[in-house]
Length: 187
Image (cartoon, rainbow, N blue to C red; front, side, top):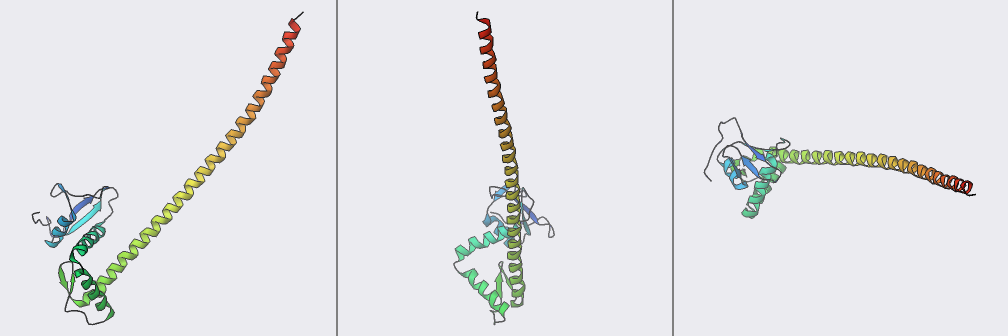
């Protein structure tokens, strides 16, 4: 892939993630993979990934996925950086610098990095709790609608059974009247 940068230093390159999890770059007019996005970030581009349906910013998820893929390839290199961040946050003597996102960050940046990671996790937990509560409410509403429809169907069935009973009585009465008329006609 050729290295491209954002059109402006302040304007991020907006990518769209679709339901099939493919990510489209309108600037290049093509779908891009995680390696392409990593290359954009490494080349200095400010990248944003938006869900095409909800317009929700999913940049953090995309970047976490890229880091996860690279972690599997690096076999422990990222773990050492995370150990360094945690040690710096706890006050232990960290290495001279902590690697973060391909750049070297000073050890004093570690607490803010850890806080940011924790905040993202908390936001994810709150979002998950909110989604779960919404699903519970939707299920309760669905159960209420199903119960109301079931009661309406039971009432309709009760009415139909009552009408059926009346029709059977009328049919018997008509048979009786028919028999009486036939008996009256016979000399």
